[in-house]
Length: 160
Image (cartoon, rainbow, N blue to C red; front, top):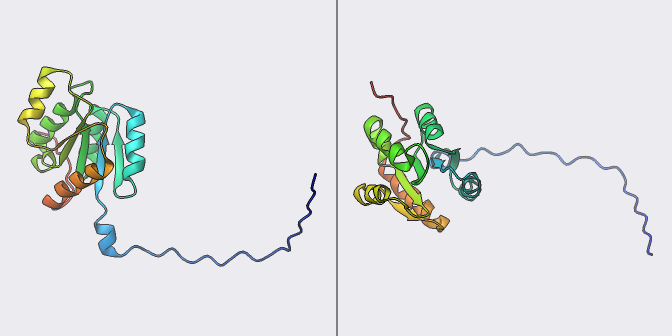
């Protein structure tokens, strides 16, 4: 048994530097994305991985996604296909009707389509489809590509 006795003299707290604001162009380039998936563990994992590069919001289903899209502007939507309440197809069709520019900024992420209608939907729609498990850098590139095609964040507008 070794015993050690350490005495520290009180010191002064180091002066805190004021946090530096990011350059305006760096702030402007931070894309705002909405992750939509009914698997909360996957949402958490994707969110942690992507928040280094993007401002990330999450929705754990179709209804929460549509509510967030109506209330907030987003640069892109990463959306699971197979979910209750109409899944990714419902999110996409709603955007097509109410916010066509936003519909053009959807990236579908799927672990496999288990129904013929979901496969047909993915085959017929023009948006990128990434298979799970996926490489997050591939996902980030897809989001950046879609965002660079659109000018500003878009919001879902109710259909009159």
